[in-house]
Image 1: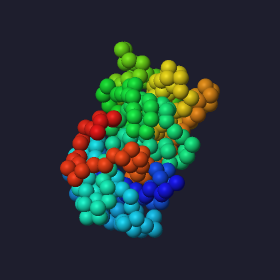
Image 2: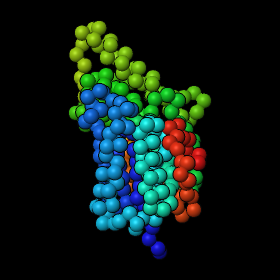
Image 3: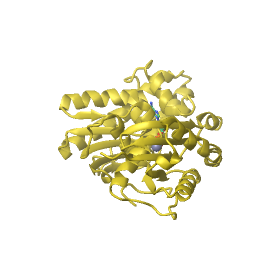
Image 4: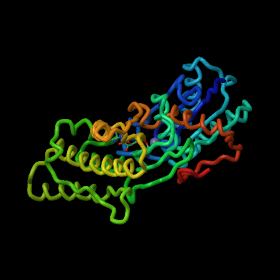
Length: 339
Ligand code: KG4
Ligand code: ZN
């Protein structure tokens, strides 16, 4: 097999990332420069600050990715970049950098959908995984239940009607005083709490077995906190965190297993930042085992935003002959499956 090396760039939110990926499955380097400390000061991602930081870091991070991979730019077969969805100013930095590198070197440019990247993170450590399979994508901006029919071919079964799962984690974490980023903190604190302590609602969306809704759960947590305050009752942070997390996990597991059963597929994968949640992973692992379904998940570092996943997705686009022109633009609300 001939070797295809791709330099991939990802700047859709608050990580400036670049990676070199071989044949879509082998990570030669994976550099992530996180801005979390900077945004923590403001309790969340400040878009203008994210863009400015990306500009400062992008060249250095891309250079480091090549150096660590032991490759030169001229060894690359394609330059891949996330062009949506995400923060427009943040995306623009990566897209502009990738276009400049591609134009200067004459190496083909491939624009990648961020969620397609998250899904493709599964190919990196699971060499045997091939479509079709069902995938639950849960990140800070997205909650999707998807059938991956083939590389780059998706059928969306369900999506969130309001908040994304990660957004709910972040908002509840802020409300109980854990701060930003909320997901990993709730995950950690929940280990000390009782998930059955508070009966938070498991939201159902009446007309769809696959859609999610998390804003009602978030309101239920806020109402609980308010009523405790009014009654002068001290809250147990760990119990609130664990009970909230259990409510999210229950809904994600139920919808996912329903989709797996209905589709008749025997393979199920998870992707996105929330896919690194330990309670979600163990609940899905258990359920899949019970039902004889093969369960795939990326390592936590490949669940949250990174460029290796973009390089993995780009490889299959490259194989199909997809190439973008220098008119490639950032598309903040790019839909999955759109080109
Ligand atoms: O995929 P990602 O890095 O960025 C987006 O594309 O949105 O996801 C970030 C989200 C944040 O909301 C963060 O709180 C959540 O993923 N997250 C977690 C965990 N680690 C990150 N949520 C729950 N448990 C975790 N361990
Ligand atoms: Zn992401």
